[in-house]
Image 1 (spheres, rainbow, N blue to C red):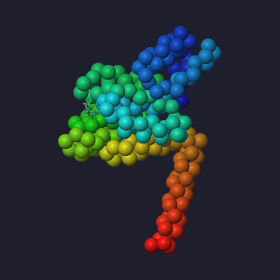
Image 2: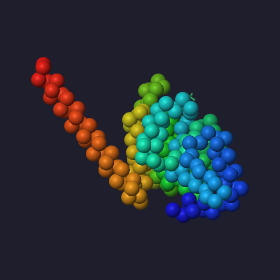
Image 3: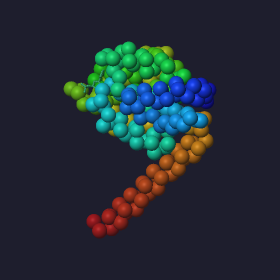
Image 4: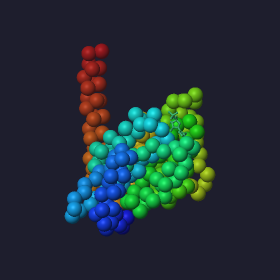
Length: 207
Ligand code: AIR
């Protein structure tokens, strides 16, 4: 991955500076810095419009952690902090980011704004709540004009979970280990359904 190589080639002083910055911003980077070696390898950048979105986006974080995918997470709003949003997006590919996940509620323009600033894939997650229970956010995210796609997920926690899985699926195109983990994830899900069905059949015997 050329972008990660670029980061690893930074002088060590710069590396420590970058890691300190990440720590100051409370980013969820997986970092491991020694004098000899730097790896700062977030592959997925999650941006949410407000910290009030975090309880939902925790589902995304759980999935990425489960698959061992390093990610970074930031609060930045398309409306309240447009410059910060632009900064987060513009240098991301050079920092090794391969997929964006952008989540917002109400007039949810964040995923579209992120998509406008990058050619990396952008997954949008509509937040529930508000006067329209997330339908406003869903329409804002899914109804992108031709030319600037956003992969829109379902409203709320299911969407947040699926955003993580879809990001893993994208990364798995060039990562065999991840592809294998996805297969076993599916197998586990199917086994779980089987177990629940067996339990239901047992239950029905006593009805
Ligand atoms: N939001 C923040 N800036 C632009 C938008 N659309 C969204 C957030 C959050 C909702 O507004 O993503 O879902 C309410 O934010 P807050 O900070 O008032 O709780």
